[in-house]
Each structure stands twice: as C-alpha cells, then as structure tokens.
Image (cartoon, rainbow, N blue to C red):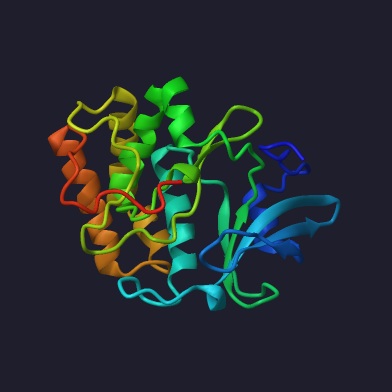
Length: 245
C-alpha cells in the first residue's frame, strides 16, 4: 500500500471511512508505550489501513488524566486541519471499536530510517510548521520518529496523545528555529487558527475532546506566538523527549 493511501472514491472522505467503516484488527504494533493496533477499515468497496489506540490500553500517567489520550490525538488532527498545517493524518474517535472506545488514525507507510534527524538536513524549512504546531498544542512528546515522510514525499506528524496540557510541557526535538522570526507560512497558519477560534467552530469541535480550560490555553498559545513573532527558546532542562527517536 502506498504511503499516502489512495483516498476513497465515490465521494466518501477518508475521515468518513474511518468514522463509519467496519474495523478488523490485523495485529498489535510493536514498540508502542500504549496498546496500538494496525487495523483495516472497510466500507463497501473502500478500505484503508489505520492505527487504532483503545482508551483501555492507555498506560496511566502522573501528569495527564487517564483515558484522555485518544481524544487528544483527535484534537491535534482538528487543530492541524483548522490551521492548514496538514501535518496530522485523518483521525477520529470510535466508540464501537473492537477493544472499546479509542482513536483511529490513517496508517502512513514510511521508511522508519527517514525520521526528523535525517529530514531536518534535507527539508529544514518545512520543519518550521512542526515547530509552530508543537508550540500551539503544547506537545510533550515530539520524538524524532514522530516526524515521518511517506513514500509520496509528504511529511506527517504522529503520536499527539501527550498534548494540550494546561501546564507548559513542550518537549520536542524541533528546536532548529528557536530564536528565529516566524516564517510567513507559519504566520498565515496561525492567522487561520485564530480565525477558526474566533468564529467558534474550532472551539465547538474541540469541546468533546478537551476541557474548556485546555481549549482556552490553546487559543492563548496561538495568540501569544503570533504577538511575539519569534519561535521561543527552550525553557528549563526538560525540553527534549526521551528517547529522542
């Protein structure tokens, strides 16, 4: 299957297929800190592969409320879409999945050896979007392996369950732009996000996934980054995730 996966035909969106299709588990994905399954999602003649992360498979954490990571994965996809970042694969919540409620995200096939620490040398300017996006969602876990390139050459960001915390939690490997002015492309995306919050539709979409305080803090981060016009410098000793990849 190609890295991008061909979108469904017949007017059915990938998100619609993920939301409504029949789910068949193909196997457990290795090296994941929480349970994650590769599944096939089928509706009529259309099918895609996806990553299913059931809520019941989330490892308890001291700083994130238990059972909320799947919703944060979906929230990250909504913010990415609203701002025009186009970094997060289509992601939905499913209450009727085989192991109970959880997130379902389009599977992106890729070469795991082509991660952030390789791609930054070849596609540096494109990484500015990842830097800004991580700031906006307060991403606490942007490892190098969470930036990938599919076999069509498109960049994607994965694993956003540890995001949107009320406290500053930014832990990311994407510090190449620290202290630099925002690019015009990033500023334009922040403006789109600000409009989406201002008009209310993004807030409404996030309401079922995050607390009202978490939504307000996300909007505040958009406004703060826009006002400063500069990518922030790392704060404190714990600004990198571990492991790095």
